[in-house]
Amino acid sequence: MILGHPLALLLLLPTAGLIWLMRRGGRHLARLPGDWERLVTPALRGVLARSASQGSTPQVAAVFALWLLLVFAIAGPAVEVDDLDDFANIAGRVIAFDLGGGADIHSQRLMAATLLDATPEIPTALVVASGDAFNVVPLTTDRAFLNRYLNVIAPDVMPLEGRALQVTVAQAEGILTLAGVLAGQVVLLSGGEPPAPGAALPPRWSRVVVTDPALRDRWQVFADTLGAGLATYDDLGTATDAFTQRVDELRQASNRAAVHDLTPYLLGVAVLLWLGLFRQRRAR
Image (cartoon, rainbow, N blue to C red; front, side, top):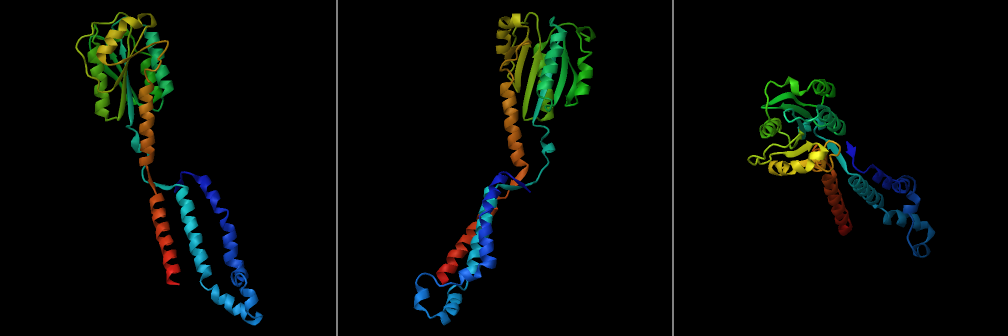
């Protein structure tokens, strides 16, 4: 069992006095209240006091139990019902390398490494493209495996010449769709002169186009047609903020789904006990 607010258990400290009163304070409970001590002869005071206080100890015990229930309810008890590993498909990212447009491959590799360092827990896939797009690495968090391919990606290994960026984006989004992730992002590492915008491609996932700083203005029309954010190799800016925020929200939701909150049950038992105390008082 886990507690959402463990410091709330400090509220149990005042109950030490109640425990002492229940165990060793019997003589205090067996005293006549107020001026009754003056009206009753000393020989009968003990008998009347015990008769008047009969049932007080169970009443104190019930109040003590009620207080325990309320304190534990405030502490937010919960039990784990699922492993957080079951939520591994929350997010995914595909880094696509445009190798047909004359982009600096070193800048592309550095940007890919920067993204991997920033969010190492997000499964990432690699796609390379020129005249066509090819899957290189499936979604994985194995950094050594990703680095192995990042070090060999280069324009001269491509089997086709040309440039098909929209095909590349569609290929990358297909990886995310097949993986069934809840939040996905395609990061297209490109450069050089932008291609003709072409037909609009409705975004299925978050998209970001990264290009050379000096060519940012020229790429704006293409990014707008693609429905993508625009960033440069020297400054990602806020292009990835919305995606990371969405991932954080989904993680928090998955953490809540992985536990079963016991607070409503404790409050329900406390209400029943409280009603029972009123019923006892009315019966008397």
